[in-house]
Amino acid sequence: PLTGATFSAEDGAPQDATADFAATDTRRFFPDTLFYSAHAKTGPDGTAVLEIETPDSLTEWRLTARALSGLDAFGWGTSSTVTKKDVICRLVAPRFWTDRDEGTVSTVVHNNLAAETEFVVRLSANGAQQEKKLKVAAHGMGRLDWPVTASNVGEILLKAEALSKASSDAM
Image (cartoon, rainbow, N blue to C red; front, side, top):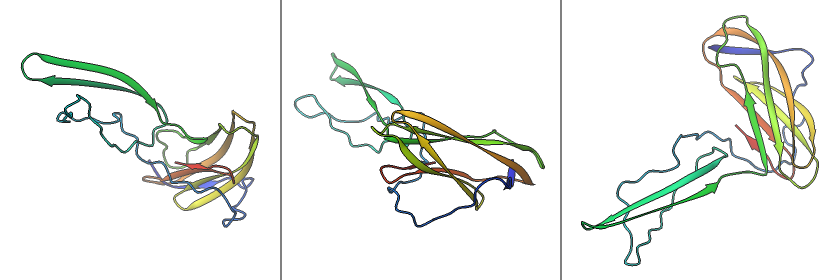
């Protein structure tokens, strides 16, 4: 793992940190299971309502419910739900580097909005931050590659952001 990273000289330095972008929370919660409860209780009509926090994973979730009442009353049902956003920023990075390795970290921006949108895409690595502009067609995607050099041994924290006035995402 790596504790530091340096960006190559051709990458742009952050320009306007105070620009008016749509607010976003950094996605961090990526569990394998949406929710599990072995003891949810149904009402007299046989239904149950459960409030859950959806993970930051942007995917389709398969829902399965099984019920038992008494000795011989069983039931089950399946459904699905989708968690999605209008703008999705994905980070593509090697799983590990060693000291002085050089490589590429990529950011992929999916624009699910109805119009072409210009994004300010930021990549931060342990406090060092760079940004570039990227136009992405409506319902399209774009990719930016960032040359990075491992400058220290240890761990690194990467953050990618795709910011626009209409919608934003970060992870």
